[in-house]
Length: 172
Image (tube, rainbow, N blue to C red; front, side, top):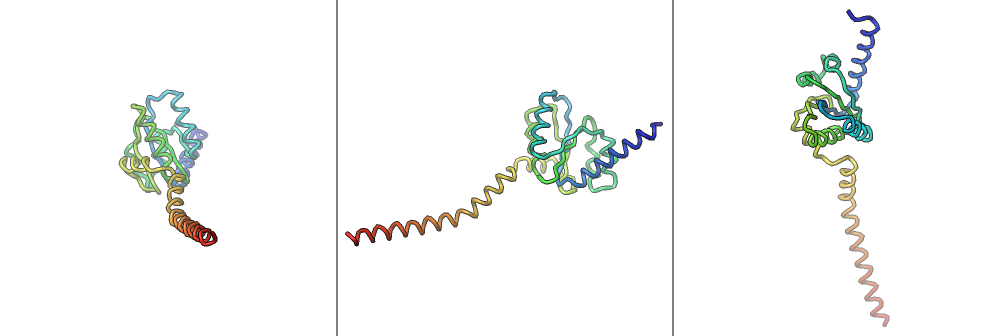
Protein backbone atom coordinates (compact mmCIF):
# COMPACT_ATOMS: atom_id res chain seq x y z
CA UNK A 1 0.00 0.00 0.00
CA UNK A 2 1.48 3.37 -1.01
CA UNK A 3 2.17 5.92 1.64
CA UNK A 4 -0.10 8.90 2.29
CA UNK A 5 2.57 11.23 0.94
CA UNK A 6 2.73 9.37 -2.40
CA UNK A 7 -1.07 9.29 -2.68
CA UNK A 8 -1.30 13.04 -2.04
CA UNK A 9 1.35 13.69 -4.71
CA UNK A 10 -0.56 11.56 -7.21
CA UNK A 11 -3.86 13.30 -6.37
CA UNK A 12 -2.17 16.66 -6.90
CA UNK A 13 -0.80 15.50 -10.27
CA UNK A 14 -4.25 14.28 -11.39
CA UNK A 15 -5.78 17.59 -10.31
CA UNK A 16 -3.13 19.52 -12.25
CA UNK A 17 -3.74 17.46 -15.41
CA UNK A 18 -7.49 17.85 -15.02
CA UNK A 19 -7.19 21.63 -14.68
CA UNK A 20 -4.81 21.78 -17.63
CA UNK A 21 -7.27 19.88 -19.82
CA UNK A 22 -10.18 22.08 -18.76
CA UNK A 23 -8.27 25.30 -19.51
CA UNK A 24 -6.98 24.10 -22.89
CA UNK A 25 -8.76 24.99 -26.11
CA UNK A 26 -6.98 22.16 -27.94
CA UNK A 27 -4.69 19.26 -27.21
CA UNK A 28 -2.97 16.30 -28.82
CA UNK A 29 -1.87 12.96 -27.35
CA UNK A 30 1.15 11.33 -28.96
CA UNK A 31 3.22 8.17 -28.71
CA UNK A 32 6.80 9.46 -28.38
CA UNK A 33 8.52 6.06 -28.39
CA UNK A 34 11.76 5.84 -30.32
CA UNK A 35 12.85 9.48 -30.58
CA UNK A 36 16.28 10.51 -29.43
CA UNK A 37 17.15 13.24 -26.95
CA UNK A 38 18.24 15.76 -29.58
CA UNK A 39 14.96 15.42 -31.52
CA UNK A 40 12.93 15.56 -28.31
CA UNK A 41 14.74 18.70 -27.18
CA UNK A 42 14.16 20.40 -30.55
CA UNK A 43 10.48 19.40 -30.49
CA UNK A 44 10.00 20.69 -26.95
CA UNK A 45 11.68 23.99 -27.88
CA UNK A 46 9.42 24.48 -30.90
CA UNK A 47 6.31 23.66 -28.86
CA UNK A 48 7.37 25.98 -26.04
CA UNK A 49 7.92 28.85 -28.49
CA UNK A 50 4.42 28.27 -29.88
CA UNK A 51 2.88 28.42 -26.39
CA UNK A 52 2.11 24.71 -26.20
CA UNK A 53 2.62 22.83 -22.92
CA UNK A 54 4.10 19.38 -23.61
CA UNK A 55 4.68 16.75 -20.93
CA UNK A 56 5.23 13.03 -20.74
CA UNK A 57 2.44 11.71 -18.55
CA UNK A 58 1.46 8.32 -17.15
CA UNK A 59 -1.61 6.82 -18.79
CA UNK A 60 -3.32 6.14 -15.48
CA UNK A 61 -2.95 9.78 -14.45
CA UNK A 62 -4.62 10.95 -17.66
CA UNK A 63 -7.35 8.31 -17.25
CA UNK A 64 -8.10 9.55 -13.74
CA UNK A 65 -8.08 13.19 -14.91
CA UNK A 66 -10.56 12.59 -17.77
CA UNK A 67 -12.86 10.29 -15.81
CA UNK A 68 -16.40 11.69 -15.85
CA UNK A 69 -15.63 14.47 -18.36
CA UNK A 70 -16.38 15.03 -22.03
CA UNK A 71 -12.84 13.88 -22.80
CA UNK A 72 -13.41 10.36 -21.53
CA UNK A 73 -13.10 9.10 -25.13
CA UNK A 74 -9.37 9.84 -25.00
CA UNK A 75 -8.99 6.82 -22.71
CA UNK A 76 -9.16 4.46 -25.71
CA UNK A 77 -5.75 5.59 -26.96
CA UNK A 78 -3.90 5.49 -23.65
CA UNK A 79 -1.52 2.59 -24.24
CA UNK A 80 2.24 2.58 -24.43
CA UNK A 81 4.28 5.74 -24.07
CA UNK A 82 2.16 8.87 -23.89
CA UNK A 83 2.87 12.58 -24.06
CA UNK A 84 0.24 15.29 -23.76
CA UNK A 85 0.43 18.62 -25.58
CA UNK A 86 -2.10 21.34 -24.75
CA UNK A 87 -2.61 24.92 -25.80
CA UNK A 88 -4.75 27.52 -24.07
CA UNK A 89 -5.06 30.01 -26.93
CA UNK A 90 -3.93 28.52 -30.27
CA UNK A 91 -6.18 25.83 -31.73
CA UNK A 92 -3.75 24.55 -34.37
CA UNK A 93 -0.23 24.95 -32.95
CA UNK A 94 0.03 21.59 -31.20
CA UNK A 95 -1.54 19.67 -34.09
CA UNK A 96 0.62 21.42 -36.71
CA UNK A 97 3.94 20.97 -34.89
CA UNK A 98 3.35 17.38 -33.74
CA UNK A 99 1.94 16.20 -37.10
CA UNK A 100 4.93 17.70 -38.92
CA UNK A 101 7.28 15.98 -36.46
CA UNK A 102 5.42 12.66 -36.83
CA UNK A 103 5.71 12.82 -40.62
CA UNK A 104 9.52 12.89 -40.37
CA UNK A 105 9.90 10.35 -37.54
CA UNK A 106 8.57 6.83 -38.07
CA UNK A 107 8.16 5.81 -34.41
CA UNK A 108 6.50 9.06 -33.30
CA UNK A 109 2.70 8.85 -33.76
CA UNK A 110 -0.28 11.09 -33.07
CA UNK A 111 -2.78 9.01 -31.06
CA UNK A 112 -5.73 11.34 -30.49
CA UNK A 113 -6.72 14.88 -29.71
CA UNK A 114 -9.42 17.22 -28.54
CA UNK A 115 -10.82 20.60 -29.46
CA UNK A 116 -13.01 22.65 -27.10
CA UNK A 117 -13.52 19.68 -24.75
CA UNK A 118 -14.59 17.38 -27.58
CA UNK A 119 -12.55 14.38 -28.70
CA UNK A 120 -11.67 14.63 -32.39
CA UNK A 121 -10.52 12.07 -34.95
CA UNK A 122 -7.04 11.72 -36.41
CA UNK A 123 -8.42 13.08 -39.72
CA UNK A 124 -9.51 16.30 -37.99
CA UNK A 125 -6.10 16.59 -36.36
CA UNK A 126 -4.48 16.25 -39.79
CA UNK A 127 -6.78 18.91 -41.26
CA UNK A 128 -6.00 21.23 -38.32
CA UNK A 129 -2.30 20.65 -38.92
CA UNK A 130 -2.66 21.84 -42.51
CA UNK A 131 -4.22 25.17 -41.51
CA UNK A 132 -1.90 28.17 -41.63
CA UNK A 133 -0.87 29.85 -38.40
CA UNK A 134 -3.01 32.52 -36.75
CA UNK A 135 -0.68 35.30 -37.92
CA UNK A 136 -0.90 34.15 -41.55
CA UNK A 137 -4.71 33.97 -41.35
CA UNK A 138 -4.90 37.47 -39.85
CA UNK A 139 -2.60 38.84 -42.57
CA UNK A 140 -4.83 37.25 -45.22
CA UNK A 141 -7.95 38.82 -43.73
CA UNK A 142 -6.27 42.22 -43.52
CA UNK A 143 -5.17 42.05 -47.15
CA UNK A 144 -8.73 41.16 -48.21
CA UNK A 145 -10.06 44.19 -46.31
CA UNK A 146 -7.30 46.40 -47.67
CA UNK A 147 -7.71 45.45 -51.35
CA UNK A 148 -10.87 47.53 -52.14
CA UNK A 149 -9.47 50.59 -50.38
CA UNK A 150 -6.17 50.31 -52.24
CA UNK A 151 -7.98 49.92 -55.57
CA UNK A 152 -10.07 53.02 -54.82
CA UNK A 153 -6.93 55.00 -53.92
CA UNK A 154 -5.25 53.96 -57.19
CA UNK A 155 -8.36 55.01 -59.17
CA UNK A 156 -8.45 58.42 -57.47
CA UNK A 157 -4.73 58.87 -58.10
CA UNK A 158 -5.22 57.98 -61.77
CA UNK A 159 -7.95 60.65 -62.07
CA UNK A 160 -5.71 63.23 -60.39
CA UNK A 161 -2.82 62.33 -62.69
CA UNK A 162 -5.06 62.54 -65.77
CA UNK A 163 -6.51 65.91 -64.70
CA UNK A 164 -2.99 67.18 -64.06
CA UNK A 165 -1.94 66.25 -67.60
CA UNK A 166 -4.95 68.02 -69.16
CA UNK A 167 -4.34 71.13 -67.02
CA UNK A 168 -0.68 71.25 -68.17
CA UNK A 169 -1.71 70.80 -71.80
CA UNK A 170 -4.25 73.63 -71.54
CA UNK A 171 -1.67 75.90 -69.93
CA UNK A 172 0.80 75.41 -72.77
